[in-house]
Image (tube, rainbow, N blue to C red; front, side, top):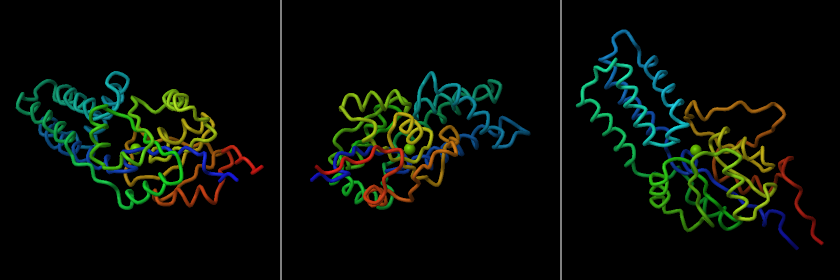
Length: 248
Ligand SMILES: [Mg+2]
C-alpha cells in the first residue's frame, strides 16, 4: 500500500524561507540613503528610496536578481540622484556596502533545521532559489542543510519556465509538486499556473517587487512556519492537487 504523500516532491525557497535576507537588503538600503541624502536637499529618504526602486526594476531584466545587480543600481542611483555630484570616495563606499551585503553570514530562521530534516524524511526534497549564482551557492553551502536535499537549484528567475525546466529534468509531474516559500509572486503563483501547489509562508518583510495579488478564486494555503508543512500535507489535499492514487 502506498502512502498518499510518498511520491510528492516538495521544494523550498531559500531567502526569507530558510534564512533571513530582506532585513539585510533593507539595512543596506538605509545605509545607502543615509550616504546620498546630503546631496539631495529637500528630498526625503522615502523619495530617494522610491527612485532607487524604479532603477532596480528597470535593471532586473538586464542584471537579474541579487546583490550584484542591487549594487549597480545603487551606483546608478548615486550618480543620477545627485546629478553627478557624488564623489569617487562615496561611490567606493557604495561598492563596499554591496560587498558587505554579499558577506552577511547565513543565519537559519528559527526551527528551520528541524523542519527541513523532517521534510527530507518524508518527501523528495528540493531547494530552488533565484539570484546571483555564486552568492546563492555560498549561502546554500553555509547553511549546512545541503545533505537534506535531493538537489539544489539556483535559477535566474522563478517563472513557470524555470520550474518546468527543473521538473522536466527530474521527471516530476507538476501535479505531484509542492513549492513552499515567502513570495506569492515567485514561489506560489507560477507553480499553481503549472498545475502544482504553492504554499505561502509569509516573512515579516517583503520586497515590493515580490508582492502579488492572488485571484479570489485561488485558495492559497498560508502557513506560519516551515514546521507546519508536513502536518499540513498529511491532513489536507489542496483542491488543485491531483487526488492521491488509491491503494490497489
Ligand atoms: Mg524568498
